[in-house]
Structure formats: structure tokens, C-alpha cells
Length: 155
Image 1 (cartoon, rainbow, N blue to C red):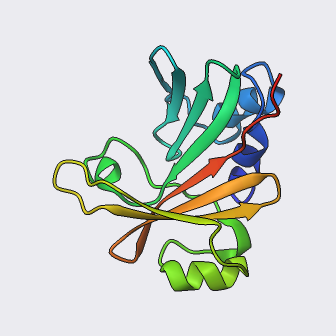
Image 2: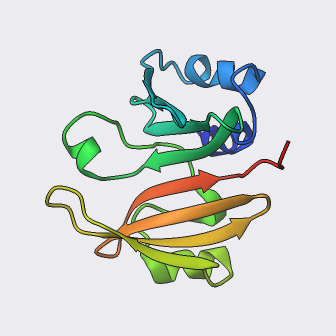
């Protein structure tokens, strides 16, 4: 699964007709797909891959991907751990300082997101990696989530 991260990253800014989108479930033998929709977004979850893709209806393309590394969703058995490699040699065991060193830059932004139902709040550090903003979510210095965001050019 070495190229899973790259495949997901390449899908950002694309719509569902892009061939890479169709390759995602078949390339990695994951036929388990869950769709969530509301008035603003469409989310496609690949629970066996640990990936959620988010499509903003206004842009009609995927602008965000969330890679689950360890969190209550995984602990409850609703999502598997993302098994692909992460950018710059980052490992799920890395803390904020190790991620900053491996990214070779300071975060371009930091935020603390509120806790959900008994969880610890998540510290998010954001980095620019080419055209993608990569967010690393930490819970008590443990890397829990990775988000990839690419906002498409205005139409």
C-alpha cells in the first residue's frame, strides 16, 4: 500500500468521474464503501482502508480526505487503521516535534478542536506540501488523524 497516500492525494480537486476515484476501491480490494450526504457535503468512507473522502457540493469535487490512524472510530471497529505510508517518512508514533522536523518547516497553522463524547481534544498542526494542506491531528502527543485538503481554483 505504498502508493495509497499518493492516490488519495491525487484525487483531491477531482470529481467522481476521474479514473483514480474508480481505482481506489478495486486497487486495494476494498468493496466496503459507505456514503453520507447532507446539503453541503458528500462523504465517501472506505472503512477497510481507513479513509474518508469529502466532496463539497459547491465545488463538485473532492476537497478533503481524512486518514484514520487511531481513534475511537477504529477502537469501536467502525473503521480500520490507514495502512498506507505517510509523507516525509512520518510514522503514526511520531509526536508534533517529530512531524515538524520531518516536514522541515514550522506549521502554517495550529488549532485545538473540541473533544467529542469523552475524547481528548485534538491538536491540529497544518503544513503546506505542494498544492495540498496536510493536517496532523494529535491526541496527547499521539498522531491520531491525518487530513489532506486541496481547495480547487474558483470556477
